[in-house]
Structures are given as C-alpha cells and as structure tokens.
Length: 209
Image 1 (spheres, rainbow, N blue to C red):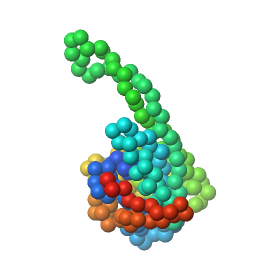
Image 2 (tube, rainbow, N blue to C red):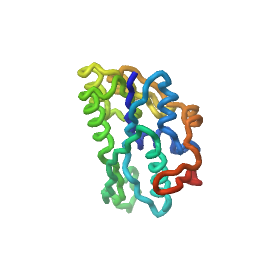
Image 3 (cartoon, rainbow, N blue to C red):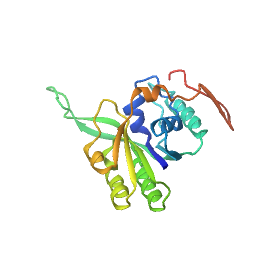
Image 4 (tube, helix red, strand yellow):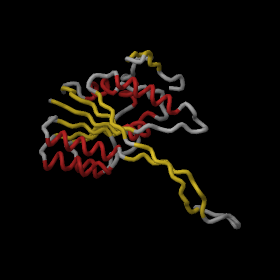
C-alpha cells in the first residue's frame, strides 16, 4: 500500500525521545519497521529551528546536526514552521503577602507546524498522492484534517501516538482509521549511524545524545 508519513517533529521529540538515549532516530527505518508490508513513498517531517538558550548553548547545533542527518534519508522532506518569543505577564498561582500578583515571563511558542502538517495531509489526499497516510502525533488539533481525509476523502489514515505513557487522544481515535503506539523498542532498534556524510561533509551524532 502506497504510504506517506506526516511527522509532528516536536510532538515526537517531547513525547517519545526527549528523556531517552534514542534521539538520533532514523525515521525511514522507523517507518519501515512500523509498516513492513507497505511501500513508504514519502516522509514529511514538520519542525522549526530552535534558539539556543543561555543554559544550553549547543541546543541549536544539535538540532542542525539531526536535520542534516535526516536530509540524507531517501524520500524525506523537512517542512519548517517558526519559533516566536514574547514577554508575557502571568498571575502567580500562590502569591505570598507582599509578592506582586503578576510576573513577567519569556514565552516561546512553536508556530506553523501543525497547520503545515494538516495542509500537506489534505493536499496530498486530494491529489491522490497516497493510499494510506500515517500521522505521528498525539496532538488533538490534528483531528479535524484527519477526519476529513478519512471520512470525506475515503482514505486510510493511521495515527501513531509517540507517547508510550499517555493514551491516544479520543478525538484522534474517533477520526482515524485506527491508531498505533510507539514504544521504546521501536526507538532503540531504529537509530541512525553515529556518523554520516552529506554534500557539506561529515555529520556526527551529538555527544550529549
């Protein structure tokens, strides 16, 4: 079955690999492991470029190394949203006497990836680009485009929940053809080589990973 994957990069990172030694994940091998009897045509990976923080100055460099590594995989496309940083005022949950009722916080939001994923899923569905779509995310905001693809277009849409400790959101369960879970065994057995090369030279797995 001709299959496209649509991967919510930050949902996958935060829900599956963030606190594991398996961040150097080979997304094509993972797709082929999860769907061994299907023809994996295209993998669309949706993310945004992070900003390094004072307490983690190598954060952006690690992400760039991973994105370069992903770009060497056949049939994989990277689609970018953006990070927006704003100063916001938020009320204290339990202010003590003499404390100000509000504090200023630096709030960072990732914008665009879910919209980009939903748009690509539907455009590819309308143009007949796949027989089966696989959405890797547990974000309930994606329930509507999944429902349109599965019910209105009559296409097979599978949701893969990347969070092994949280149930798949009910809106996604109700919208998809069926759901699957991503387990640590899937991460462990589908890692990229420690070093790769592209047109710019050597790509090395970050030591912290």
